[in-house]
Image (cartoon, rainbow, N blue to C red):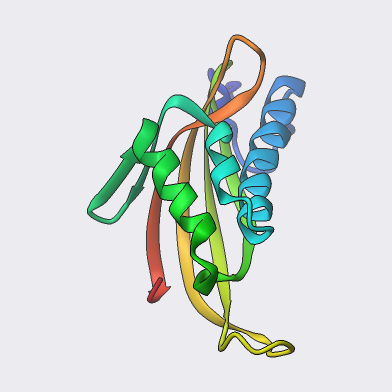
Amino acid sequence: MAEPTTAAERQPGTEPDLAALRARVACLDVIDAIFRWVDDGEAARTVELFTPDGEMVMGPWSFSGAGLAAAMQARQEDSAKQGVHVPAASSFRLLSPTEAEAQTYLHLYRQADQRAGTAPVPRAVTLLTDRFVQGDDGRWRIARRVVDIIAGGE
């Protein structure tokens, strides 16, 4: 059997090379940081995890640049959207030495009401498709995130 010619063609169950492992860890770090910062009330900070021209697509809406920064600032200020984002295992493909793609299923839980001590309830299952690029500084950032709601309503 011939060896895959690109990292994206690697077959499941075969060992990835060190570069692919390093890229995967760095990109999954970005995914985890976004949810942690949003859940900690620091959604505006997530913009630094996107490339300067990075884009987030949510249904008919698309945000990039100043629009993305404004959207994340508004998200940070919306206290009614307190909740917990729980990412499931991500699939990952290294497309080139400086480009990668990941898909992550996300479970979203929200407070049923704002009273202290109430347990969060499931609100949505979402599929995130992230396209990453590695910058000249060595950091991986999201160039494009597509958010598709699979179940639920947020």
